[in-house]
Length: 118
Image 1: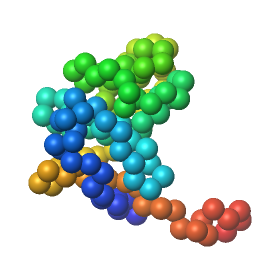
Image 2: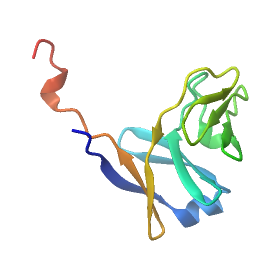
Image 3: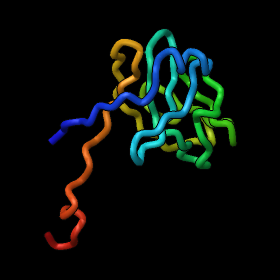
Image 4: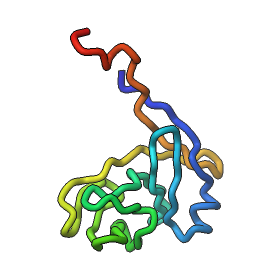
């Protein structure tokens, strides 16, 4: 049941050209991609505090600074690392295939699992 859907969402060359931080989208998932110490990380793109796009933030080391209120998140774990942020952001597993950045997503829920009482 823990199978993931692995999809290429960007290229390593594009992430490097973007300065190590960029947005990516797959299906309903909006991501922020980061390059730190030659490792690629992926989190949800929205700050858990104010809803700003983390892909527009400032990356220093393994911390992304939210562009709205300057809260911090650890890109490795998603944990809030600076106020006013208190809730973690979701992280996604990443692997590199050639020049492709491939991210693991949870599988979609079965259509009938949302029905009440089933």
